[in-house]
Amino acid sequence: MYTPAQYWNTRREIRFLRQENARLQRVHLYQKQKAEQTEKVIREQDKLINELEQENERLKKREHELLEQLEKTKQERDTYKGMLFKPEMKSSIVTLERKRGGKIGHRGYGRRIPETINRHIRAFLTHCPDCNTPLSRTDSIDTHTVSDIPHWKDMQPVTTQYFIERQWCKTCKGEVHATPIGVIPGARLGINLVTMITVWRYRFREPLNKIAERLLTHYSLKISEGTLISIFSRTRGWLGPYYDEFLEEIRGSPVKHADETGWRVGGGNWWCWIFSTKKSTVYTIEESRGGGIPRKILKGAAGTLVRDDYKGYVSIPLPQQSCWSHPIRIAKDAAEKENASEEMQLLHKKLKTLFELLAEDIAQPFNRKQRMLWYGWYKEDIEKIIHTPYSAADAKKLQTRIKNQNTNLLTALLYQGVPLTNNQAERDLRTMVVTRKISGGSQSEQGAKTHAVNLSVVETICKRKLPLLDTLQSHLITGATGKY
Image (cartoon, rainbow, N blue to C red; front, side, top):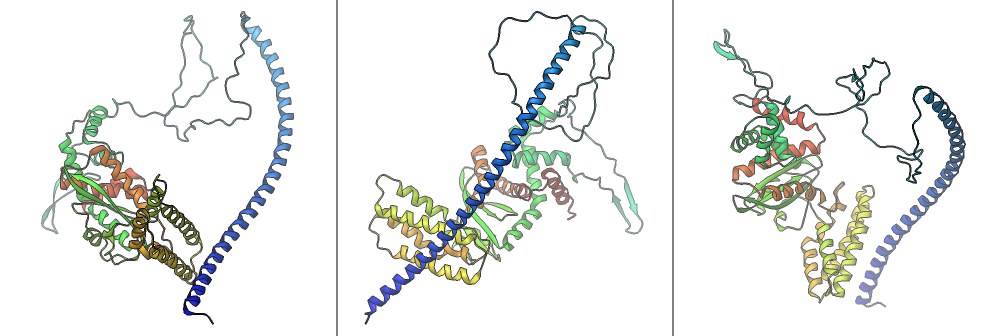
């Protein structure tokens, strides 16, 4: 008869052996598939080698024929050359330098000739540049194609004065006015200029003084930094509806990411929050880092939230997937220290192995029943780490972090398309980080809000791989005229 303790120990060992057996089966299947792929590659390589050897023999034969033709052509060239020109004295110095240029069969890389040629210019001489002898025209030509931008003297601003008729509508009993196409109502600067400086500012991250200098240098157009700030403030209002549209798309997306970083506003410490999907990116700059910000932004949202281990996201009523990159990176840094404990090193290996197995299972086709079974196994592994009586301080610290995240580390098993890391949000947030290094932040709260809205629209257009200038200009005209 088994005692209760022996029974539970046996059951625990059986569960562990089942997990280990399942893991070994996956490893065996992976190695078997890898071996089959390797054999297939070897067979294909052998076949390719045979074909290349045959091709090499054919090319050698062709090379020999071409060399004979080349030698014959050289002899003919020298014969005709002697008829037209006087022979020059050849140098007796023999150079041993390697022949310049690529070898025979080398594939060259260079700029391709554009499909569209905008203009054709024929260049010729009327007199010889050496002896000034008059030259006659010829039909024999060489071609040379050059792509260039307009000369800066040709890139001058175009000022248009519109004569808008004051017309009377008999039906409406009122005066009506025509609205010029592509003109921002009440604006003294054109839509092309507004579009371009918006791209310079929010895509190329140029400071205001550099934008003003560029306008003066390229277009002889003097615009102050204050005017630029006013323009960007107005574009914020025009692009606001699109900002709200992108936010609604994020709220309804099955998978969404969130992250935050510091941002300076008027010399004070504020926070830049990012909420993103594969299609949209929304930034918001707030004075607080509290959990109320993500609750407000994601109010009424559906789907799964992927985030880091910051506690401000805990109160959001959504299934949440904690990023695995953070605990693994922290464990790796702690395990590589000189004074790292043996417990810390073993814990790092456990986490790394657990993540690799989890990543393999996530990559499998989604099967709800199978995923639930795996979820139970991985949950036992997480609980085992949480309840292990570690004595080393570094291992305890990481254990507490794992305990705080708990099953949030496994949410990706239960929902299709949910990643294990928050890398997308971190990549999208990098734009703000680079901008912060260049500008140091915003001078005012309104400037911060303007930067968040305008940058969100520009980044979303680029993320959706739409034509940036055309799409942004369309959004600006639609927002300025109110004709959505």
